[in-house]
Image (cartoon, rainbow, N blue to C red; front, side, top):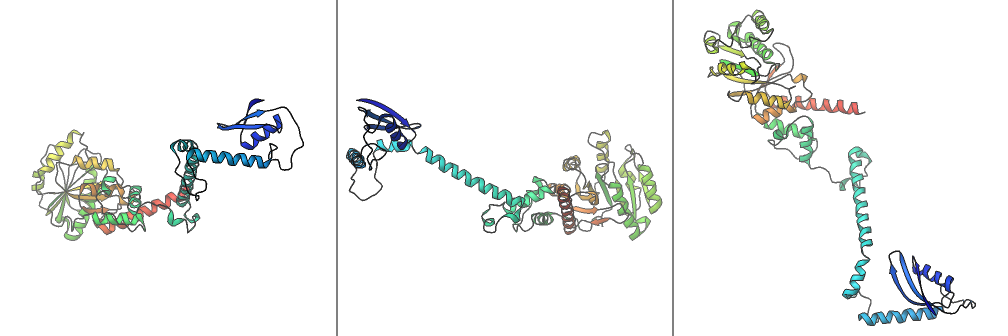
Amino acid sequence: MSNQRIQARDMRSALRQAKERFGEQVNILANRPIPNGIELLVSVGPAATPAPSATADFGIGSQERFAQRARQTGRDLAAQFGIDLDAPATAPVLPRTLERRTTVRQPAVADNAEINELRTQLAELKTMITAVAQPDAIPAEVAPNISTRSPRVATVDALEGIGFTRQAISKLTLTQSHKDPVRDGLNAVAKSLTVVKSPGLHDSTQVFVGAAGAGKTTTIAKLAAQKVMQGGANSVAIISLDSRRMGAGMIASSLARVLGIQVVTVSPDESLLEARQKISAPQVLVDTAGLTPADPGFRRQQEQVAQLRDATLWLVSSATQQISAARSVYRAQGKLSLSGMILTKLDEACNLGEALSLTLESGLPVAWSTDGQRIPDDIQEGKASSLFHQALLLARQSTHAFESKAV
């Protein structure tokens, strides 16, 4: 007799190979697992081909003999590891040697568990994406289990979507209703805004500063026209420091002719304080040039304005201006004591997020807002409720326009 090794993917295949190669007189001596299946060690005797038994199992010996051998092997293993086969079926405490053998085969189970967990997460992610893209496609019983953004996060995202800065949003007390994030956010903005009550009513001298093109001259013309309608041509006068800009003198002459008021132009070499003292009108509106700090005349203009110690200073800021540029203009006026802001060109803006962000960041109250070129119309005193409705309207319009283009 000689010993032979047979390798197969499973026990059934190995036994079948043993029968086909060595006949029915083959004896199994041992078996062990291998990476790709199982290996049998068999002994082979003289070739013999007796008629197969009706009770043969896989053609190797009788079924009874195979069962007896299996039972004996089980008893031997039980005796070796101290296991009582007659005890009730409970989970036995295995020795360390058997534990090690068991843990070797566990990675495949762990891998299956990880794969199942990954499949579950992917299914949940697919459901969440569908909920955002097609809310109506999510079944009612699944929708409540989908984790959604918190109301605060939704409101912050909505405000950022219409131009508000993180710095401005951090100053808000946000609501948690989550019914309409845009409305909730703008409502918080309106509650945080401060306004000037009856601006300019008792101010004898008002100075308007800001960037070029912000709307200072047009705003002054509107306020001057209202003063003329209330108290006559002698109730107000205008001083212009914008002597270098092309067309500035023509604008001043037109105001003087149309409104019948006194308009004085002061050059950088002249004293603004002396010019103011020569005017008898009870109220004077000072129009400054929109200079940048890099301009040589910027410092001189600030010195002129600083001479008017009792003047009220308004920062004129356009709603169409980017927040970075608006911040730069605001910081450039840092040496002046600003009393408030005037928001202009609301009718030309896509949203009021950046304009209102500057008011929240600076803490300056809103004195007036303008939304058109008509004189003396299209100017209103600053009201939080009015700004709220204008901001909400623009937000709705921009959202509708975006959705229309997307379609």
